[in-house]
Length: 99
Image 1 (tube, rainbow, N blue to C red):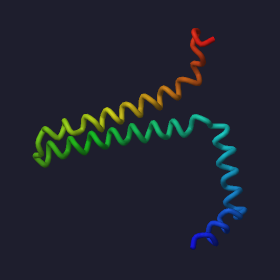
Image 2 (spheres, rainbow, N blue to C red; image 1 turned 180 degrees about the horizontal axis):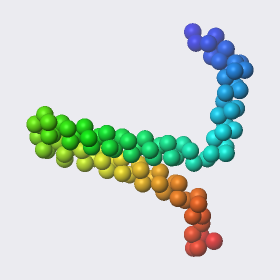
Image 3 (cartoon, rainbow, N blue to C red; image 1 turned 180 degrees about the vertical axis):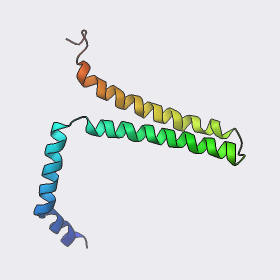
Image 4 (cartoon, helix red, strand yellow; image 1 turned 45 degrees about the vertical axis):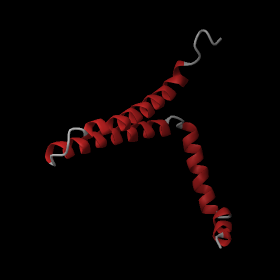
């Protein structure tokens, strides 16, 4: 059913050129995806906090809703620290014990 569409996509010169351009751009800017991911995680954390604050304050929902946000906040902080760790691992290089 999808074979004709997949064959057409697979042999598309326009798609091939676009993938080549993206690949060559990403080769020169290796940390760009990490920075984009970090910014998205930060925006998600801020949006999550604002939405919960608005729900509790303006819609008189229970303050216990803050406790439900603890796992999501810890998840955001874990992913964020992982991204920052990956970004710092390359410029800092090997540790002196690893040599």
